Length: 231
Image (tube, rainbow, N blue to C red; front, side):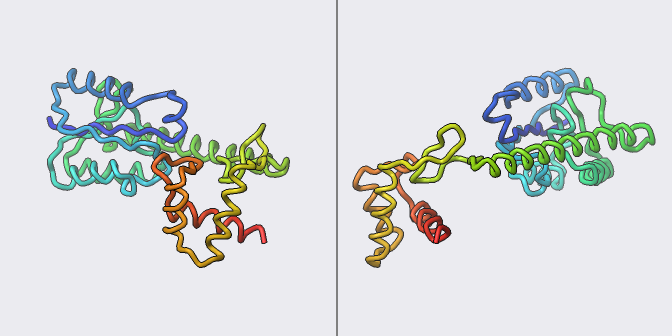
C-alpha cells in the first residue's frame, strides 16, 4: 500500500506549539509501519485554517493531485479535523476517494480504515465532521466577540501599524517612526515613486516594523493608505 501523509497546522498552533508537524509525523509513521504501508510523500499545510477548503490549500492540492493520478492507495492523517472541518466537504471527498479505491486512515483510530460505505461508519464520520465544524465556528465566534469588545474599549486587536507601538493593548505613537511617516508623506508629495521612497529608506538604514530585508513599495503604500484613511 502506497500512502501520502497529510499534516496541517493552524496559525494558533504554529505560534503556541500545542501540536507540531513532528508529533503528527511520528504518529503517522508509526501507523504506516504497523500497516506495512509505504509513505511516498509527506505533505504539510503550515498556518492554514481547517476552514479553508482542501482544494485551496497548497498541501491539500498536492494530496488531491496524487489521488487523481492514482499514485496512492491511501491517505494518512493524525485525525479527521487535520483534513476536514466542514461536514459537506468531508463526506464529498470520502465518497470520491472510496470510489477511486483510496482508503483514509486516521492515526487516532488505531489503524482502522475509514468506513463510509456502511450506515454506522458513515454516521460516525459525519458526527466527527460536524463536531469539528461546530468547534471551528465557535472559535471564530469567540474571536469576533473578543475583537468587538477590544474595539469598544479603544484597544487594538492586531499587530501595531508603523508609527505606533502596542502598549497594554492600546496604540501609542512611536516618535521615531512618526518622523519617518512624515518624511514618507513629504517624499510622496514631491512626486517620488513608492519604489524610490522604499529604496531611500532602506539605504538610510531605517528599519521597518516587521521585515528584515528592507522596505518595499507595498510597505510605503500601506503608510500612505492609512494616512488617507485618517483624513
